[in-house]
Image (cartoon, rainbow, N blue to C red; front, side):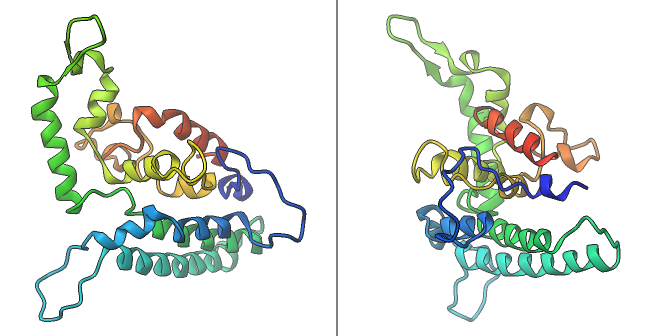
Length: 238
């Protein structure tokens, strides 16, 4: 394993480095602060986490759930790091790699649900079913041209993206584009963090739920985000 490659600090849009000493945070600590202060993350407080009927009036939201997952993920990173160094005895895994892994997992926990629609997996199914029923009826018309069925205008992967809509895939889109922090790169998070939230490294054209391979269970990126996906894969060596 090439740890310095996997734990890539680069961003899709490079940042201008400030003079040494003015910002003591690591790149992954900067990610944490970007996420915590973002409107996209704060909006998770408006999504109720699925929970069983209870006598308590305490309602857990996606926000509190994400904070819990973030805390657990960092602890998991600490245990994994210790195992790599003491059990596996990987001498290439340095103390700074252990710190980076913990910070990345802490951030990954914060944003793992940021693209989920209301009602979680039920919401995903509702979106998928709506497009399967309605997309053939939708029309697209350019000025001066005759209206055409939308599924004839879109390429096959675009159509399959609608049919296989997935919350984790939407999470990648939210943090790289839809959350407009400074420019079209969204939060512009580190590539290692972005890689950590891509659960299924394939397109909607590769989805095969009956293959027995977890990789093809769902898609990992939309057609519109293919360049970002390729960049992340190449930079992190995944």
